[in-house]
Length: 480
Image 1 (cartoon, rainbow, N blue to C red):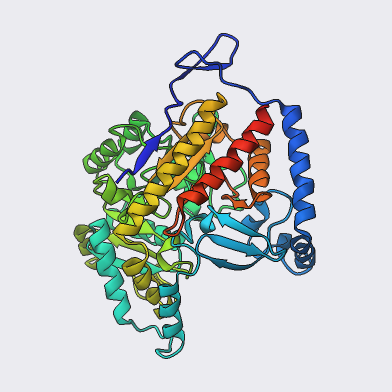
Image 2 (cartoon, one colour):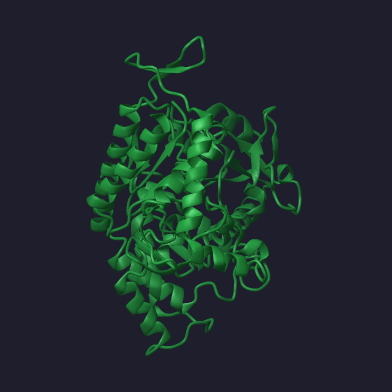
């Protein structure tokens, strides 16, 4: 199974004038900003004209919802207001203006199964109906079955459940500090691990750690709790771990939320070795990189973390997260008489491990996110990547595309970013808005935060071909 694919585009260089060239000598093209703004304004007008009911509902919602949306990130959709949808099945969404879209966003991974897979919905309905009981604070058979499935996929023996990957990350960081008696955690700059306080930290322009710009009211300055280095920088990681005061390194095997930043050859091996040398625990957050295979990057790339956290896709849209730990980790935390894992020790939640979430997770893992379906999803994503790359090459664009299994993303950079800082520097809000609105206006839904496309088990090559056509048209209009 192909798990990670890079665009050949990174073989480029800068000329003396600052423009980029490909290895074959082709000069890569630059964006005419005046033309971009003209086209962007045209697409904004079309979006507003095509979606009057969504606009009306958004205006009404502003009277009762903060920022007019049920959660703040919904306000980031290009066009000034989000689409309101009426139904979603498979990889199709229909909005209140009766327009249907091929969905490559898939709830930013939350619907990697496709929307409302029938077999999962049947399990959910049984749990609600004939079986009955959702929140009892008692286990069902489904819990251990899901644990066994995750054990097989990720190779870690012991699992527990949360309502989100954020909670899973928060809980295991607390446990890691408890059993190591160390104060710091370490993350990579521009990472995303949900709304965990300690992770909203970046390497500043001066190379020093700082709270991420826009961090909303952190309880404490995260530099007091967290060390941060750039992804793929082995020497910076070595220096940060040298004092042996880091409880855990929390990382995605490939960065995703800032755009896909793949590990350089040998980097992940070095992370494992440095953690072993210094006694830091290694946590793989597979919430997004689950796209790599049915056991995420951990299985696809033969990784050996002490802990895996995961969420979003596990329940086909029903809220659930999970964390798995090594035998040694489990032994240390369960043997610690000072750790209150039961009552008010900061780990747990009344709805965590509820019967509904676990019924959904069992059906999802056993019947939807199977090894066979992953193979199909990756194959379709291979076609997506080839199509986008062909357009990039044809028009000599200074853009790249990277694929991790069933997930692919293009960036407005002539070389694949090596770390979060480089990937953040490639962000172009006007280009993002133009590409998103152009595709939405022609029936294709992309992830609003960035240019990520995700395949689900029912995504077809014809869906990908449609995207390639529309993507090519957007590029052709922009560059002439």
